[in-house]
Amino acid sequence: MIATPDRTPLPREFFDRPVLEVAPDLLGRVLVRTTPDGPIALRLTEVEAYDGQNDPGSHAYRGRTPRNAVMFGPPGHVYVYFTYGMWHCMNLVCGPEGRAGAVLLRAGEIVEGAELARTRRLSARNDKELAKGPARLATALDVDRAQDGVDACATADTPLRMLTGTPIPSDQVRNGPRTGVSGEGAVHPWRFWVADDPTVSPYRAHVPRRRRT
Image 1 (tube, rainbow, N blue to C red):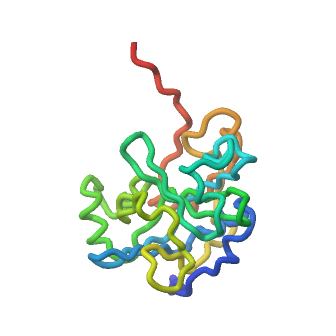
Image 2: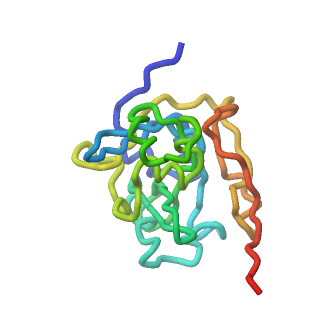
Image 3: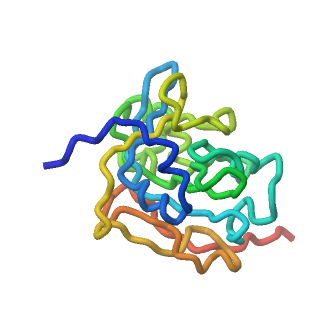
């Protein structure tokens, strides 16, 4: 029997911890996206940790910029970036204010509002693919740079909110290298996922892009 997910909002203290503690603890938690068309809820099944200026794979490795400023702000806020000129990806800020850290939300299961998510993910072959990968997740939830800086711990009037959900037991959590990360950051096993969950995205190592000649 599957336990009913806890709908209590996650407190800010949950995120005010080292990113490597927060990341696996986010698995099984529920993210609610409120839109004018209705709510969409997603159970997180795959995430990646990025440890700021200690991590060559992090956007904050070389310090604060206008693009990554939210990563240095209060924990529990949303950091959204635009990549490859096409896609948005969503993160949750962790650790004390002033020290950058964030968890990339890589995949999840839509547990409410699937009919709405389907209208945004027309290429998905089934509901397991609606949020299977970080860009697909953001697209399914209609997340873009307009949500950058949103407080996911707010108790009211917020377009994105993290709920307690049902945490995943540690023996069902797996970890390994992060997808598509190159250089020194490639060695860190900071991708975490729920074992045998069909919504988890496949691992892909970094492949250098070739310049056109």
